[in-house]
Each structure stands twice: as structure tokens, then as C-alpha cells.
Image (cartoon, rainbow, N blue to C red):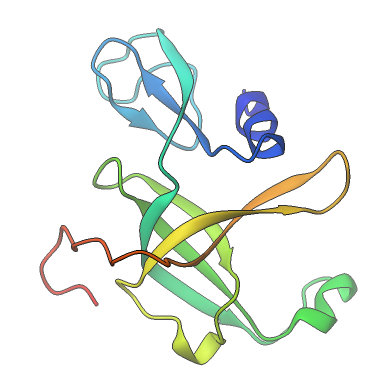
Length: 137
């Protein structure tokens, strides 16, 4: 069910499932649309733009392989395509002290191995996206 997401990442495209009947974006992927229950869903590329909805600064490595990366920011990113369309990612290219709720971010792809590419986010280089919710940021 996540194949399109990971294959898209290898091509440096952020792929999210979308209902072909009601056009609702669905993430994490599901077999049926969570809005209209249609089984007609397929992966489509999104812009890769979003805003930090929430975040946490990691100061302890849960895995010894991450000790050299500390501290790092893990964020819930609300994608620009739809209110409530979230993904979880690390925030790269930004000191952790500068990460903020409401911060505009854009996807960047980290080629970890020839087989694995991770969609990550960094502060947006373009103008910030307007917040769709009052009281954020």
C-alpha cells in the first residue's frame, strides 16, 4: 500500500493517495477513501510545500545509529494541498532552536542508499504559506 510513496521518493516526488471520486487526499495511505469510502484511490504528486503543525526536539537517540545526529527536530507537517493532510518528517537545514509552529517548509529528498530515499523537510526558500488556522504560529 505504500509502494507508490517510496517509489515516488526515489524519483524525488512526494506521492500521496487521492480519492478519484471526491478528490480528497488520504495520508497515511488507505485502501478506501476516508471521506466518501470509494475504493478508487491512487497516488498523485503533491507540491511538497507545507507548514510545521507541531514538532519535538529529540535529545536522546532511540537507536545508537542516531547519536551523531542529536539534537534533531521531528515535525508534523501539514501539506498545502488540504487542511488536515499531515505527514511526519525530520526538519533539515535548520538549527533546532529556530524550528517554529507555522513555519513554511518544503520537501527535500535524502538519498540514504541506492534503494532508500527519505522525504524530509527544510525551511521554505520561497515566501511563507498563509496559515489556514487562527492562533497558529
